[in-house]
Image 1: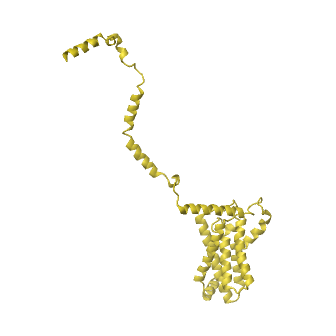
Image 2: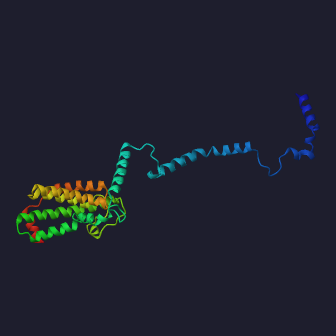
Length: 271
């Protein structure tokens, strides 16, 4: 071992690069870039401690994302069915909106179709009911008219409340008429004209003695009112169908809270 060490020292002394004037050749110059492997090792060593913190931060950010920013890769069957029915409803409503604008295919019949819709408006029905109530002289007639007035007011409040809550727009960009603003019939769902037509038709069929042709005409009138609202582009098909259903349940509710003749006379005298 001592001999080997002495030979190594002698070899170092004989090495030219170990002389003082050549020592700078063995050292890297100042400002020289480090080798890439060393940089990768250093970056890997510095990145390893931050991995747990970065993972926790990413998890917190993913938890804070709103639901609308998250993609649903596996939508439910109910969602697919609902979206499909909604697309069909919009497509069919646009096809039936043949009087929706001046450039529509049935633009010449727009005035007549709007007139049919006005026959189901709330203002003419409420005004006509009050006028008939003032002119009526029989107790039975006043009882029927007072309950009809109650049903009309219930219809306006129900439709206005549901429209304000849901705020669904129609299939076309059509502005409501001044009469619609009076009855707060601004949005599309449900169709107020359709609910009123269904409720009034059922009311007359139950409390008036009508011949069969008049009964058929009354039902056809309600259907035409609902169809006219789709043709002018104010409502979807589902809006009108929902209006018919709501009108029927409104009639059933009025039947449950039917005011007697004495109650009607008391209200008329107070009025």
